Image 1 (cartoon, rainbow, N blue to C red):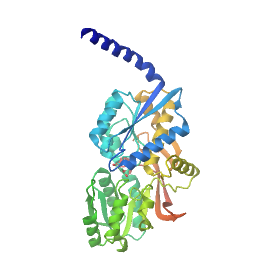
Image 2 (image 1 turned 135 degrees about the vertical axis):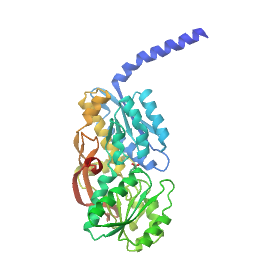
Image 3 (image 1 turned 45 degrees about the horizontal axis):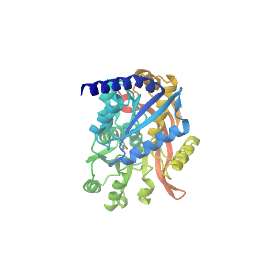
Image 4 (image 1 turned 45 degrees about the vertical axis):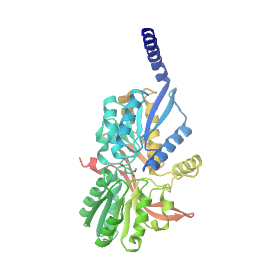
Length: 389
Ligand code: VNL
C-alpha cells in the first residue's frame, strides 16, 4: 500500500515537473460553445470560423503552437462555469473564448476575473456583460448598438406607432429599451412592449396582440437560431398580410436561416453589423472559404464574431511575443483595430467592447437566394449604453 502511494506521488511529481516545459511551447485556447441544444447553430458557426482562421493563418505564433480546445456547454450556465474552471485549472488555457449566450458569458466571468485570464466573448450581446469581468473583451456586438440605428431609420420612414416583441432575457430587454427610448425621443410612439419566453417559445398569443394593436410596425428581437420559428408563426397568424411592417435586428434574419425562411422575409428591414452579402473583397474571400470548408454552410454574424475573436487572440500573442500572462494579453487586445470581413472594427480600450459599423439592410433575392442587402451605413458605432455613462 505504502509503496504504491510513494510511486503514485513520485509519478505525480514527475508529471508536474514536466508540465511547465510542455506549457511553454503550446498555447491553449479554450473555446466554450453551445454545440448541442437550441443554440447549436451558434456553436457550429463559431467553431467552424475559429478553425478556418487557424487553417488560413497557421497554428504557430512567436514559435509557439496554438491548440484550440472546443467544449460543449449545451447552452447551460453551470456547465459553462465548470468547463471554464477545468480549462483554466487543468488545461492551463491562456484565453477563454466563445460564450454563445449572455447567461453563459456571465457564468464564466468570475473565473476569468479570479484567474486573470482574458475572456473573449464571440457571441453574447447584452450591453453590460463586458462589465462582469475586467478580463472580458468582446468581438460580437451589443443589442443597443444595432437597435438605435433601427429606431432612427423607423422614425424617418413613416413609422409612427410600434409594438416591440423580444425574447424575455437580458439582450431582448436591452433591445426593447434601446428601441423604445430612441424611437420615443424621435417622436414615435411605442404602444405595447411584449416579452416572449426564451425557451420553447410560442409566439402565437403575442402575435395576436400585435395584430389587435395594429401598429405601423412590429420591432422584433429573437436570438440567432430562433428566427425561422418566429417567421413561421408570423405567417400562420397572417401578420405578413396585415399591413403591419416587420422591422428587426439582424438576429431574426440570421444568414444561416434566411434562405430557409423563404420569400415571406422579402422586404424585411433590419439593422446589424454583418451580412454575408457585405460587399468587400475581404468578405467575398471569407464567405467562399467558409462555404468550401463547411459543405456550403453560409457564415452568419456568429461566425464573424468567432473569426475576429481568433484574430484578436492571435494578434495579441504576436504582440506579446508569445507571452501568455493574462494582463499582458489583455493590454495587447485593448485598442486593437483591423479590417474585419464586416468592415473596420476597433476594441475600445476603455470599455473592451467593439466599435463597428452598423448597416441598414433589406431582405432581397440575389442569384436565387435571400440575403440581407446593406443599403446604408452608420460608421464606428460604440455601445450606446456604455457611451452614455
Ligand atoms: C445573444 C444575443 C444570443 C444575440 C444570440 O444568439 C443573439 C445573447 C444565440 O446575448 O444571449 O443572436
